[in-house]
Length: 451
Image (cartoon, rainbow, N blue to C red):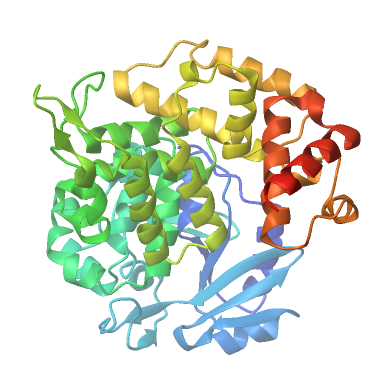
């Protein structure tokens, strides 16, 4: 690997340490990214300067983790996390060391890190590499390997096995067999990790180019059964018919396909969970065929439970569950203009592209190959045409309001809501009826009927 280009702003910040006679190294993910030819997303520095000394060097310093020797320096629009060289004691909470001890040695500091590819340091300003565990070699080999004994590393922080899987999915790296094998023995420690931290790693897995690179070893190590038992239970649930795969493989492939389409996070989550209700709704017909009638409803319930368990925002939960609930639409059955309008209303105009993408991913994962480009074209073209017309998709689009109904004698309350909804149904069936005169005439007749 050739000479690494270090950002001039980072080099300028490093000079504040050098002028005080302090060592300073770029460490962590930034070094790993540079060695992979990628631009670093953030900068972490390690130094023999004590936190108080770092604070004295810069004008803006935030004591983000000063107890563990870490501060955040704000310098020329950048946030730089700076940590004093340290060694660590036991992790009794399965997340943070009970105590840290500062050390003058960068090698000792690197020995506490999780994976060899993250245990490389570049001395600033010249970029001399310090790589005591052959992390650069592992990067060349595309291998994720723990520093030292995997069992010890994973017992220190239960999130590390999930991080290993995440890196595998993000970078298309293999996990060193002893490192992967240690995951099974760390399940009790992993179970103590906070839901929010698991959610953040899970989100990064789902956002990766091929999420199944993490999910397949996650299942084999027992981690899926621990964290997502609803998904793990889909293994061996056969579908047959048009389906080539069991429910779990179908779900993982659907998530991968959504990623290939560049789908948003809610679509990828919906692709992963859209069929998890099939276990509870599976029935065997007299002809020996499995059916999954209304499985989408059960999938919505289970998906909501999973996302709530991992503290997803309500807006995300609602979006994903809505997509899961609507994924079973049959484009061939949406024939009339009124049916198209009802489809738009049910899905939501703002969700149309997402539901198309989810349906394409579902179809791909059913047959095992990409559906033809025209797979949804008849529906999408009709939807696009309907959207160019004057139309009423909600009560606020009607040519009359509740105030207009009051003027013709409709009393406030449930009756008014019923009449307004019937007027909307009329306009959905025939948009030409959406004029004030016609709707008030219909409203008068409805009011008499309900009197």
